[in-house]
Image (cartoon, rainbow, N blue to C red; front, top):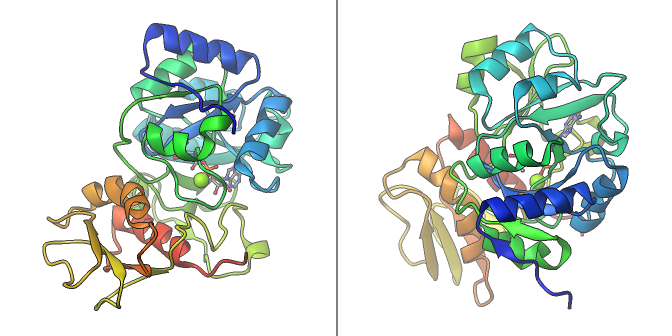
Length: 324
Ligand code: TXA
Ligand code: MG
């Protein structure tokens, strides 16, 4: 087995070492406010190729490119008024914008998987900010998990799945948002919500008006975002949604003050019914309950508004039948 990468607190020395590793084309896992990212120099074809290989990610699924500040993202894409308004309102933060890629962009073509668009984001986590500033290059960074598995919200989660495959893991503690960034496509007439996430639809609509949404029940081919695969975020145990009773041997992913009785194990996303707390706990609790000796995980219903949309999206995909 490959030796696991060091988990380092984000000291000036560790950030400098991370910057050197990235400049040399190596991969560095780092915290963002949403989930941990598997970072590579977005301008280096080999480094970006290594991201796909390391995650086992299909080459048709493009990556988000992270920048220290909005002007850097602007240099690689065609920003319009809507992009300006959204960037002003929500950057730095958990929002990703899909925009036309500039012909002169330095970003590796592989990062956008052959599309003529680019997904860009300015994260607000202080360690992500420090790393992006320090390394002076944009970072292509998908969530730092094996493709199709549960996203990591702590450095230990990253070490569990990709520890042997990265130069180092920068430790920024538990991610405060806990679900990935919201992805908005601005390449059409109307802004389109490709992935619900840390910025809610209500927040977006207040800035750019109502968004078009994309049906996730359409066939994979019909999806405008290659990453909208039905099965994703998958625990090993089967996951059952909207549970009203428990079956024998099932673990309970509870929400609210009245967890269903009789579970073999319980994790409560938010005893007080708070969606922000529930989002922050979601992936870590799915991991906790995903263990041998249980027959499955039953999830109680979560309200489908605000951050509840992103939570329900991830739960639906975690529950989707897997093709293999
Ligand atoms: O919060 C996040 O966004 C995290 C942190 C690390 O920033 N990153 C993340 O990356 O979730 P990833 O690779 O797990 O998800 C990126 C999503 C995928 O669904 C992908 O298909 C979509 O963004 N995407 C990327 N580039 C795109 C493009 N050019 N057009 C449409 N969708 C795109
Ligand atoms: Mg992911």
